[in-house]
Amino acid sequence: MAMTFTANIEHVNQTTSRATVRTHTFLVDRGVAKGGLDLGPAGGEYMLVSLGGCFVSHLLAVIRARDAAMTGVRVAVAGTLDGTPERFTAFTMNVSATCADAELAKKLIVMARRACQVSSTLRQSAALEISYEGQPVSLGEPATV
Image (cartoon, rainbow, N blue to C red; front, side):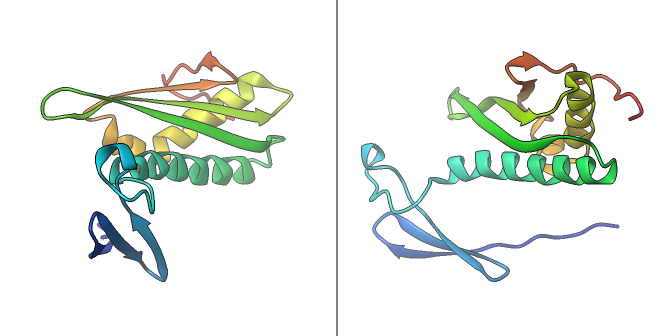
């Protein structure tokens, strides 16, 4: 069943916009170096937040569903801009967490990546690499956990 998400964006001043999603409001702006007022992250930076937020949400759901011993989840997301016109050509996510079983952690990460709508969308147009504690995670078929 198809679902539609919506966001409303309105110009506030000079380079700043206000975005509203459901009951949440936040600012979007360019950094000073790009002529902005730096009153909020840029749109491209929100793309990184979107990727990381979606992925972590799914990872936490996978951990809970399996009652897995994985806590303190943190994800560092980076995006590489290149080309003309400029676009994201690659994304990396490094997952850190407390988990005694690194192989289990990697399996959970693969499952979360497959469930994450943002990573599934972005993988169609840019490379996406994920690592756990700095070690690459094979994104092949996940084993049953």
